[in-house]
Length: 602
Image (tube, rainbow, N blue to C red; front, side, top):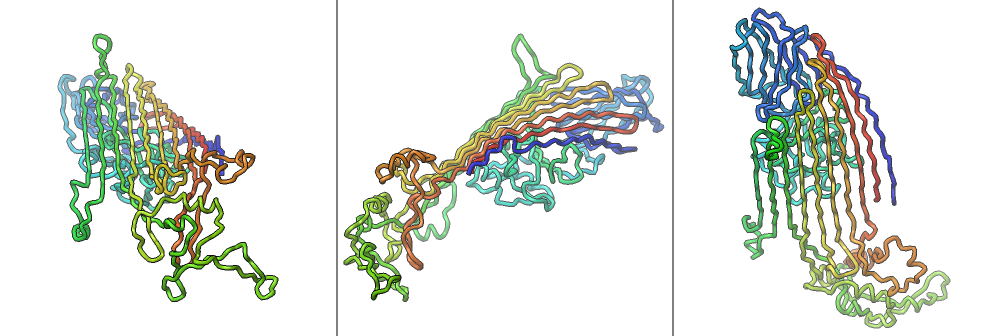
């Protein structure tokens, strides 16, 4: 069934919501904020004071002034460590270092200026992380230090969200055999319940860009853990510009600094490093194959073009890439026709009688039906002597002979599990994350973020790679890029405008391989009928034949041939907001427009 949905959803959410907070309050706003009041030693407010907030790693500074109420607000800050400098003619300068803020947090830092010369500076240190006391937003975060030191067996960035109170994984998010390839895997790795909310009711954001699919609400992008600065969960009473979901999981990538930094890593897991189990040792069974190889690296710093451009203090970049490969062993026992059964000879085949004992099978000739004792509704047929079919159908024999031959001793007299398949399922996932931050003049702070998450997972055909029939063989792939850009514009010392645009594309496929080797003419299919085939060269579904209650049946010869899940999405988000400090109030208003374009085949 094809479900074309080109404009599946158009959502217009107007977030013209303002926050008016008096006294020691501040606005619940997107990104991070440092706010406070500047007073003299007697507690009187000081309007017109210069307030400069500087990122200690990039040396990028933002300057505002206190208003008539002595209040200042520096909005739209990224996570990091900052220095606050306050000065006013006739007073000693105030300088506070080490102010640590996370993503989407509001931190208060008041300043008291003593009368004196401006050249005298009062230094204050803030070694501990600043508490967020300005909003009622319930949130928690995992920073880069914890991410770097906490084990994460399948490199799932959403796993860190489960470290917060009230966040419960719906599935096994840290399954070592799942790397987040395909919408099924990505849904399992990103499915969390937050404060008892429903699955799929949360928004997942990366650097301010929503990277969540519109159909199954799964994360489209799984950034590498070495690229993450922070994973934050905002679960309650958050601001209106985050009000598209039950809760928000916000991931932030690292940004470049004034110094060049880089990392290189190679992580390997192999059965050679594992201890064998007691049962395996006692039965002389070797350790099962388990091989995961993960290579990656990061680099960041200022953009410098010798003799042409020096980006220190203004233009920075950060790039992260990782590649994970996993070789998953696949073994399966199946039942296939015996050598004689492939020729229509069932003389050695057994079935279970009413007492549960194996007895020879009896096969009847369907072309010898005669009325039973003159009845017009009941018929009897003659059995084939010794259960050997003397007039086999050529296409029936062709089906039996399309199975691979038995390759192991059966488990019982009924030839159960007389075929064993051993193979491997290769899984690959690549992640690329980039970020550029640019301080353009005194008024503009621009950023660009973009990346790609792609991969493939191939399950082998249990009948072997050369068989035109297929059971178990699937091919799953992902190719999901994302991009975002924004500009924070300082209109005047008390007014800031922020504009952002994000784009996420999802291309995901999960299907049984069609193949091109099946010839319908060899099976008696007329050409005029073949012309209607949706997928020429693909074998038909052949399943559920043979067997009876209490007796084994042959494995499906060709299962789920028409299983095709294909997802294509192009999701846009445009938002803008303006923040105004007015007397003791901080006001914010804005809007967001999201468009979800999707096409699904299932």
